[in-house]
Image (tube, rainbow, N blue to C red; front, side, top):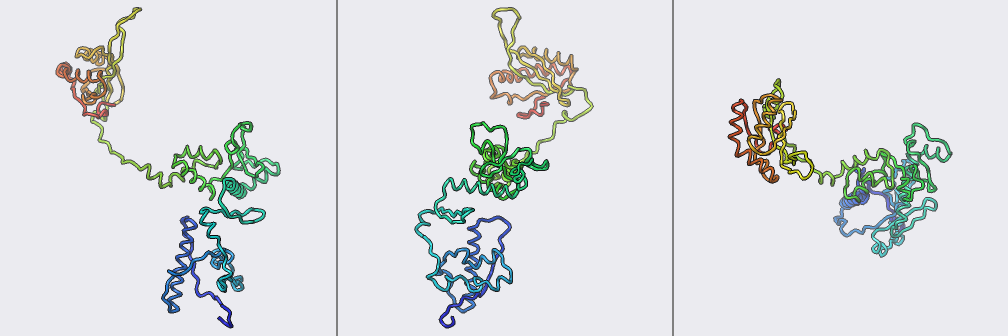
Length: 406
């Protein structure tokens, strides 16, 4: 202080570069406040004082009066020499009465405020956000994005020229409406639906505006899949290569990753020897099983004809997967042996037969239980008949149809 005047020269400055990972603006502001508090403590200790910032008063400084904005916005060395804000600070530091006033009561009543700057008048309006203002802001951002990415196409449409054949938008027959938004054309001019659904606005694939729109819709639909998200977005926007961009967002979504964990891959056991031995005649090793029941008529005469149950005997070649079917009229050893004789007469004698195990039938239905009981009771009779023809009979393990050739 000289001759009663206060002087505020800069003592020390410090700045930090924002990280590459995108962070919210409030988080960056809190980081800046932490750097300021540490710098304030260092300066206090250098001048021999020990009081910290616990009792310090934090006030808001507008951007035009904030010296820190000079570093963030950039300034040349020649301009910094004559910059009074950088060397002496804002006038409110010298005179507390000139500090900008804030309407605390209004901020407490409306926690979510708006600061809207119109393009023509640049007037700042403060108050609660309305639906119309959100829609206008969205349209403004869409128009600015389209001017950045599709400037040549917009000029061609305004001048009445055809689009270039190399343009990305030539397949969409785009047009610009009265509001200046570039929209997708089509044949739905007379459809009684909303204009956004009938002619969605065109957005580029890789743009800073496209990704937040996709994320917001993804969260609104409770982390839905790719196709549902694409269908919902096309109610308002047509994103170029939209499916590809949506897949990127969904793939990097933490909530989707948590809800869809990858299951463990189960390593299956080796195939049975009869399945992989080559150079054998088909049906040398055969798996047999019953299917049914089915109803058959006893005769072809007209009128009321008695219907009986019948079954299908399925013979599967273990090596070639060939299938042979035989009709079995009843669950008796004689009927099965007759079906086996017809099978061997056409396909040749088998060296080994594999039959589905009984526990696989349990709990299915009454008819399958009958098959299980038939195979269990008549096992000795069937085995004796097969032994005479040198056919080995064996049951496969429970719940393992791959052992039977299936």
